[in-house]
Length: 118
Image (cartoon, rainbow, N blue to C red; front, side, top):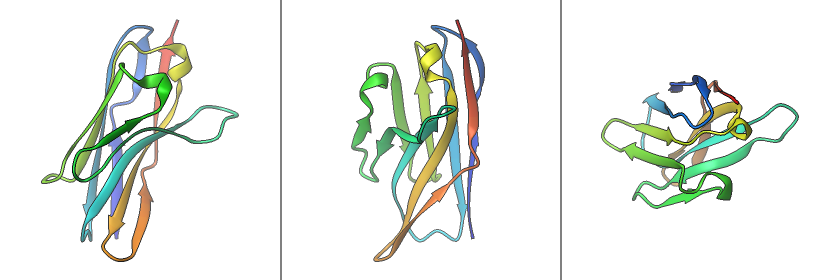
């Protein structure tokens, strides 16, 4: 079994910062890419940021320059530093981990709420 657990969400004023953390544990052979997704009410889940095992990163355009994704391969963790938060960043944020060798599977956390007051 694999567990993906997020932490760090909450309420912050516009312009403020939050740091999300995600820890993956359990029967893990290899963690490939890890990422953060978000889903706002009435919207589809969207990719926010993604990082490969080697450290290459991808960001959705709306968060470039404000959010930074990082990971620790030894600890099986991935973080998302969110600065200059805006009301449009309000959503439930989900951690994703792609795990496996020749056969891979995506695992998801339960989500953590981020709310930004204007």
